[in-house]
Length: 104
Image (tube, rainbow, N blue to C red):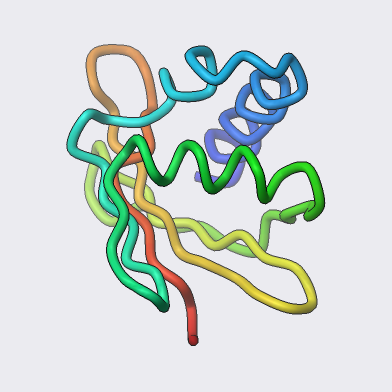
């Protein structure tokens, strides 16, 4: 699972550094939902928030595990904060399906 997650993170970072929000958004399922400390965010708000966050924060891979044959849970974080994300294999692409803060 680590190889898959790190490859996805690399692709996401490339999309973010390009500044193309549409390219970054393509890594999310349409039904993506992030459970944050101040509420829940759908795909559009999550893409906007993570795009802004990526300009000031570097997230690092912490751990990952398969939770099914086509689903992986992984944790990204830094000294201040961390979150868990689920990705699903849809067709031949791994896409972000949900996320939540590790603690608020």
